[in-house]
Length: 257
Image 1 (cartoon, rainbow, N blue to C red):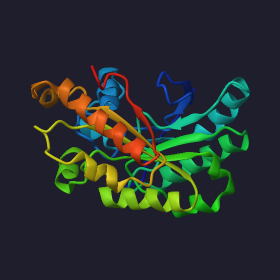
Image 2: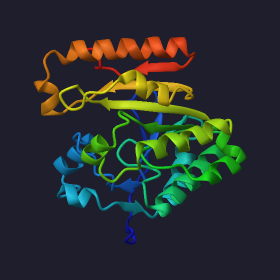
Image 3: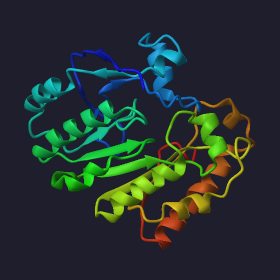
Image 4: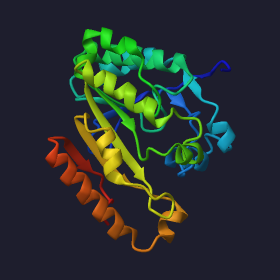
């Protein structure tokens, strides 16, 4: 893997507007996973002129002064941070980039030392060293999983970790006593892929929480007849499955409309 380009920023922590996240950190610019749903983060960065192309987005740049920024902003927000999410516009454990994963762990440990828990979401694999760190027990570790079909992954998440590897990585953390969750978003309509939602749910039935959301910004979703009916039925199936298996659940805003 080529060495990462370094960038510097003036700020790191920002207040989130998402229901399950208080503050957020995005300590990398871009994401090598190259998701083609399309990726909302990539579209926004391109619209704002931060990146020039899909290829530019797929060459991640690490924020080298992230630890220094975190120290400064912890003092600024002292006592006001309930939790921190990693990440909304990049992947904290990006497949094939150990340097990114190590920086993520460093930032998480610093936040944990201030009794601030983290929620984490990845399409990569969690490093085994997480389970050796006592402070990590406050955090919640998640994976994105919207299918079990590797053909679908190669088309829509071309450079992300295989689905089975993600599930196994999350199951390992769960078996070590850490809290785990699954983001089933953006879930595709049947004109993109025909699949059995219950099979996907069964594959992650060990998780503590499941979040479900629709696929937005895709012409193929808009072309599907009555997507609101489809997502309503799928959301009901998620809720029913979670209730039967004593799993917490959250249906993302906009999924049912």
